[in-house]
Length: 156
Image (cartoon, rainbow, N blue to C red; front, side, top):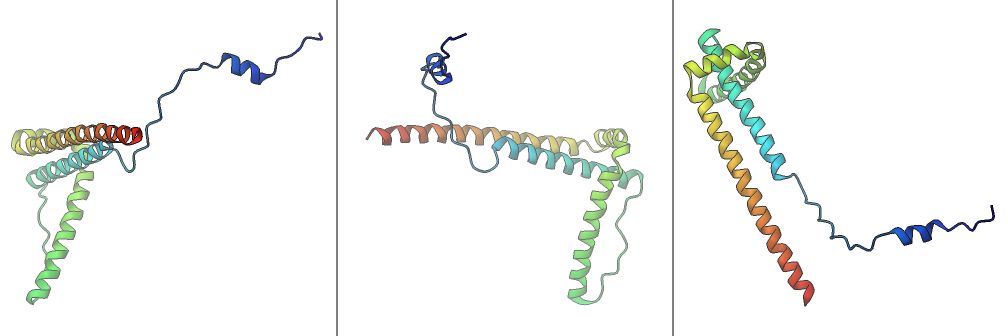
């Protein structure tokens, strides 16, 4: 019972490996390229859906332009144009949400009647993916050059 206890410090020092660790990578500032590309792809997908839903609603559900008096003169026309834009934007966004239960009908109508909508949406999404790939490649290249510069400047 009178055994000598080793201190924990000695045990840890004896079992601790002497492997040198690689320096930690510095944390990047801001959002990553992958995060930006995903956000843009979600936005493009939503806009494609909004256009497809508006196309379906205008062809099937009589989704039309609201009747609105424009007023007199240039100022009245300007206010009427802005109001028409805002009201139209709200109606298109609301229609995109309302048409979610009809997603299968909207998709079928878009593919059969307006095939340019999914083609253009796919091309824009592909362009965003290509741009993201190019930006990631460029970021890796800049990181290599920065590391080489740091290595050369630390040797001097």
